[in-house]
Amino acid sequence: MNDREKRDEAAFTELFHRLPLEPTPLGFREAVMKRIASTRARSWRWEWVAALIIAVPNLLFLLWTFSESGDDIALAVGGVTNALLGVEEWDASASVYVDGLMLVAIALVGLAALLATHALLAAERSRTLAA
Amino acid sequence: MTQREVGFVVLGAVATLAVSLLLFAAIVVRQGSGRPTVAVGRQPVPTAQPITAIERRIPQEFRPFIAPLLPLERGASDLGRDAAALLLVLLTTGGALVLARDQVVRIRASSAGDAAEQLRIFGIGLGVLVAVASAIFLGVFVVLRGVIGLAPQNVPLGLQIALSTLSVAVLAVAIAALLGFTATAWRLGTWLFGFRPWRSLGERVPAGLATITAATLIFLLAQVPILGRLEAAIVVAYSLGAFVRARLLRTEARVA
Image 1 (cartoon, each protein chain N blue to C red):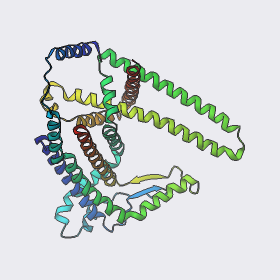
Image 2: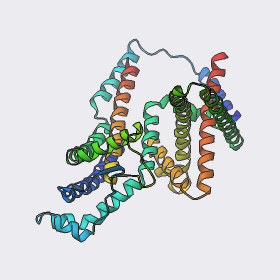
Image 3: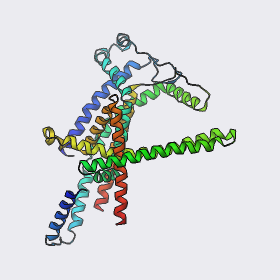
Image 4: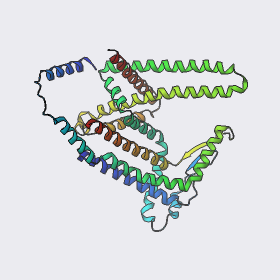
């Protein structure tokens, strides 16, 4: 925080301290927080909808890919394991090829998972706020 | 949902529809083609087939719809392979923003200030980066000298342990840099969207989108020859500096 921001914060603090204290009616805070909590609980978070829309086609594509090319993937994993264990030697002719659309689909599924996690964490935060 | 959130959902749905069409085209084209999806090591890399040959394999009923999509599908596949590193950066940045939001917010708040302050943060990061690199180099030398002194049958195990320790140290630095990078991208994104020509639109852009946009820009700039390396080094140093500064400020506040 620089000097200007510190001065601004100090000025705001001083201003708020000058305001006369007016206690809210009994139960006011609880009523407001309950209303906020119920509103948030009822509304559909957009992250859920977006996550669902993004995840479904990409998951279907990945499922199809794994069912169609499962042997290739198993062969590739086996090759990496053999190279790690020294059973298979890789030289300059070794290569790594993964279908680009599969990579995009995996990234989009990851993005959808992040959106869903964000929605869950946000719901948790709003519940904590209301409690 | 607010109007803005509905807009995001509609935008996401349109983008997903486009991607779904390409995925569907890929499924129709590759069904029973025998072309491997993954090839690692000594497996032969599949070569690109002419589009006319692929068109002939498409069932007659799908051909009018799928054939025009084939060049796009091939382009998206090639682009996806080239952009894998960018997708990884975006996913990790998004992950840091969601899973370590408090830390990122703290780093962002503590790195506020004028140009001199930003230069100081960069200096801190540069110092930390050089110190970490020196420590790793010396550590590797000391550990290697110790491993050489072991019995010959224990040398491979010693080397594996040394490599694992080195990986853990690098991982710790990488996590710190990632948190700093996310805060930096957030700051840069909000700064970019705050420019006068598109300020009114930029104010409505959520922080996550601004962060991802800035992270993409940083990554793309890092691909420029020579200058890109320099930019990447500056960003890594600044990110580390922002992280370290936030940690130090928090310690000072606790002591006070």
